[in-house]
Image 1 (cartoon, rainbow, N blue to C red):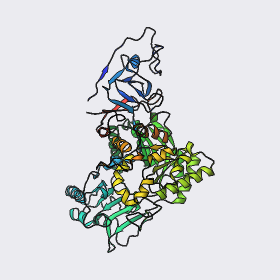
Image 2 (image 1 turned 120 degrees about the vertical axis):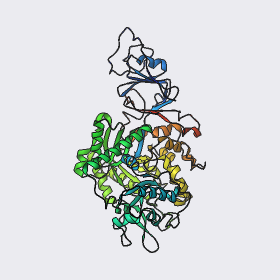
Image 3 (image 1 turned 135 degrees about the horizontal axis):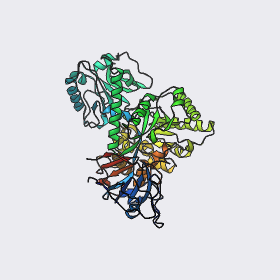
Image 4 (image 1 turned 180 degrees about the vertical axis):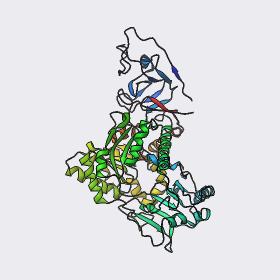
Length: 576
């Protein structure tokens, strides 16, 4: 249903009104005059994520701030001649979704190439590449992202470890280099032309933390696992773009990402790794009004001097914060790059890959303590999670610091040894997780880990919360679609497409799942005092949905659609 906005004039009480910018809470019994709100949402199912007042019918906003919640009658006092009134018509309003871990520019970049997330077979991908090659300039690179071999309906022939060989791509694109990034971002696949331009041959050694997959004759198959993806030098063999062209494309990427997340009801995006160059671009586009979503950014790379100078809190009226450092210790489960304590059940010769230097990680932890940064570490396998917990614990003790105050994070925390689960709560370490990964990965988790390891430590949300840990939600986009509804559904059902449930005892309640997408990621970014719930004095960041996802039957959750996205009291997305 399309929402209708209308201006509703009322006669204010004879006692007069307060100044427009004055905040006020609802005090129905007092009958005191209040300042007219700039916006009122009424006649809705408002779920606040605030335990002090969990639900309401209406909400009043002045400027970018919530001033009152209550019944329709209570909030009618805030309606003046200049108030924009939005009739929710029974639909749900909630705190704006906060994407707890994603790759902001990756979302925009994925839209500039072949989008492979929904492909069902390698043959389908080859056909897409062939079509792109037929329309490409000579020597133009063909790029794409989103494929996942575990989600194909059949195994390619020939294959090595279930991955295809490059000959099929060579046949449809002999003269155009091709590189296709795995959905996880932890592997890529190249054709012969791309490997030729990048000087990848049978003699190419594996880089640290990576592998060039080879066939029985020793020739590269085209699959580059983990850091080996960096061997493929995209753009080689064609004229380099001018600085102006490069900047125009970078800004286009930000615009596409901004539009995409707002359309999905996301008001704040916690970006899991950007450079300071990207941060400066974000600032310019915020200043120009071209970036309406709020960003909380983890910095990847950068000199110590740049990190000291670059820490930023609430830039652009709370639109940008840079207060975390991101490092990586292992890869992904799908590519068998997650670093495990024991070998993979379906590949006994491998325990995954350590992709980051442990000594450097310890040094970075100390730097973070010294300069007021949070530390966010990518760890998926149980070995990687243990190593991170050890580093955190050592650093906290050495500096006599309370981990709960520092709010350091493990990004993903997907597979944890049973002995390490309690340490999250004991140390105050935040488990920055993505519920949709559980149901997306489940079909191959049992094969990779076996039943016992999967049950005791795979996506154990309830076990972590019972330890006292904060668990946040997200999608890791563009690894998954950035849609919060799909991840919320996964959190409360753990139901797979075939109807089976993946260790259902770890499901979240409806309100737990809501908070994992609102209040808890706000806490994980030191922003819970200004966002994450709807309460007087907090930012008016609101998502309106067609259905109340906290009450509808499970099978109706995924039918909920975003109607409005409001950031700072302004409608920045409206469904057509």
